[in-house]
Image (tube, rainbow, N blue to C red):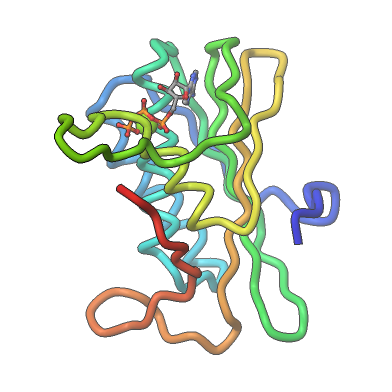
Length: 164
Ligand SMILES: Nc1ncnc2c1ncn2[C@@H]1O[C@H](COP(=O)(O)OP(=O)(O)OP(=O)(O)O)[C@@H](O)[C@H]1O
Ligand SMILES: [Mg+2]
């Protein structure tokens, strides 16, 4: 896929949070609640992605961040969900992200896994300039008839092998 669908889908709900660690969990729950109430099933992936992006906003010293959840849309076999995390820090992360290399005999890098994880779990993601700062826009995909995640549910996202 990789297409920009923003103009085809309705904004479902947005909520703004103080960019401090305590609000990351609230932001995750907000996104999951909104998406699930619109029929989205893969709360695990959505929660993980929103947690990573909200944490990045906090670590970028933003003052506020906003989570925007759009209405899911479908094709014949899959359902898609666009979610954006907007913050008021002007710096954009690099679009190309890869897992930090683990080198034998060296202490593995502690940082740099969040966006590669988002990239692996999503259908598409990109940073985008906004008036206030920037948005990280992520499109998630799940099979229409996949079981809900959690417990014994099968993951619907495709895990690509990584070195870390
Ligand atoms: N919202 C953001 N605002 C500004 N820079 C960002 C933002 N998100 C990511 N970045 C930049 O991209 C880098 C990579 O982000 P990523 O989430 O992959 O790793 P990390 O946050 O450094 O570490 P980890 O997520 O593994 O704890 C960050 O170190 C930061 O420089
Ligand atoms: Mg991070």
